[in-house]
Amino acid sequence: MSQMPQQAAVPKCPSCEEPLEPGDRFCGACGYDLSVVPARPEDSPTLAVNGAVPAPDGVDWPVARDSDGHGRPAPVHAAAELPGTDSGGSPLPPPPPAPPAAPPAAAAAAPESSAPGVRFDRPDEPDEYPLQAPDPRLTTEHDAAAQDAAAPAPAAHAEPAAVTKVCVACRAGRVDDDGYCENCGHAQPRERDHMEQESGPIAAVSDRGLRHHRNEDAFSVGCTALPDGAPASVAIVCDGVSSATRPDDASLAASRAAGESLLGALPRGTHPQQAMHDAILAASHAVNALADEPATAREQAPHQNAPACTLVGAVVTAGLLVVGWVGDSRVYWVPADRSTPPARLTEDDSWAAQMVAAGLMNEAEAYADERAHAITGWLGADAYELEPHTASFKPDRPGLVVVCTDGLWNYAESAEEMADAVPPDAAARPLHGARVLVGHALDGGGHDNVTVALLPFPAPPQGAGSA
Image (cartoon, rainbow, N blue to C red; front, top):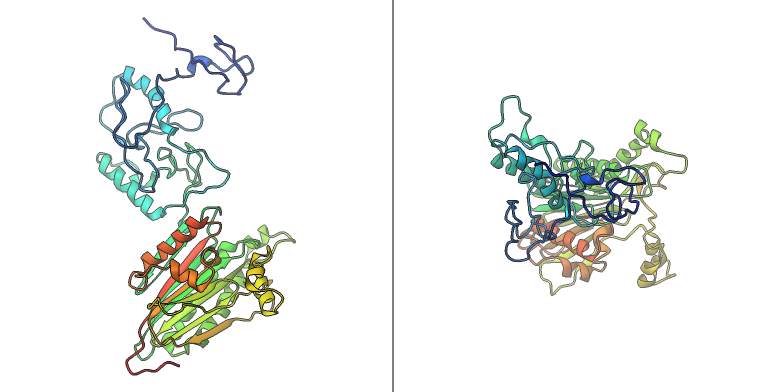
C-alpha cells in the first residue's frame, strides 16, 4: 500500500517564508507543495566532542572525525561518503563510478536522510570571510589524493578526478568554474590567498588575513652569488595601495621587477646598495606601465588612482646588510643574542612619521591618530617625485632580518615587540618563523594582508672588525 508523504509541521513556507496554518498542504501565498518538505527528524544531529554519535535507525552514518585539520570539529561525513545538495535542494552531480547502487526503495530515501547532514555542521556565513584561507595547493592535493584512494579505476572516457574540487567550507559542495561552492556559495581560496616560499636560507609567507577579500601583498625571494663567489640573499615585499586601481597587480609587478633586477645585478659586481636603488626604479617602471594597459583604462574612472604599491627590500651578503624602501613597509634587525637590543632599520613614508620628524607630535600621539597610516611615498604613475631610500649596515654579530608589511608590524610595532614575536630558532628555521609571525598577526585580528620574509644574517668572518 502506498502512503502519502508525511507533511512537515513548519511555521513558514520554505519557498516564500509566508506563515502557514496547521494542516496546510499548499502555501496560500505561492502555492508551494508542502508535502515535499521532509518530516522533522526525531533527534537533531549532534557532533560528538569525544566518542561517536549513535546512528539513527536506517542510516549508516560514517564515524565522526576528531578534527578537520584547522582546529574546528570535522563534518560527520565526507563528500565522497554521502550525497550533498545544492542551494535549491537538488542532488549534486554523482561522484565517480561506485559499486552497484542500492535497491530503489533505499535510493529514494537517500535525499531525505542525507539532506539534514549536509549543512548542519557549517557555521553561519558572515558578511566577510574570517576563515584563514588554507593553502590551496595543500587542499587540492589532499582532495585529489582522497578521491584517487576512494574511487575505482575510471573508464577510458571518464574525466580526470583532479577537475573536481570540494568546497573548503562545507566540505560537500562542488566548486564551479568561478571559484564558488555550488552548495553553500562560499568563495574558495585563490592562489594568492596564502603563499609560502623557501629559497636557500631565506623564506617568506603571505596571507590574505581575516578581513580582506583578496591578498594585495606580494613578495620575491631568491639567492645568488657575487663575482667572488660569496653568497647573497634577496627579499622584496610589496603592499598594494587599496584605494588605487588593481593594487594586487601593482604589488606583484613591483616585487617581480625588483627581485629580477637585484638577482641580475649582484652577480655582475654592482654594489648591493646601488643594485637596491636600481631595483626600486625598475619596480617603479613596472607599476607605471600598468596605468597604460587597456584593462586599467576600462576600469579606471576619473576619480580613481593609477595602480600603486609600497616596497621594502633587503640584501644580505657576507658582512653587509642593505635595505631599501618606498612607503610604510619595514625592515627590523633581531640579533641572535636576545640580550642585545633589536632595531628598526627603515623610516616610514607616512603622515605619522612626518609629524614625529617635524617635532609636532611624539610617536605615540602620531600613530594613535586616524591619519597615521596615510602614506606619503609610493610606486605608481600618480606618485610624487620618486625618492628611493637605501641604507647599508655592517652588523658585528649574527641575527635575523625581518622584512614585512604593516599587516604584521601593526601587531608588533616596536623593535622589542617584533623581537619578542620572532621564534628563537627562526634563523635556523626561517619558514617556520615566518609562519609563526603571520599567525601572530592573525591572532591579533588579521585586519590587513600579512606578508613577512626572514633572512638570516651570518656571523662576520673571523678577524673582521665592525664598521
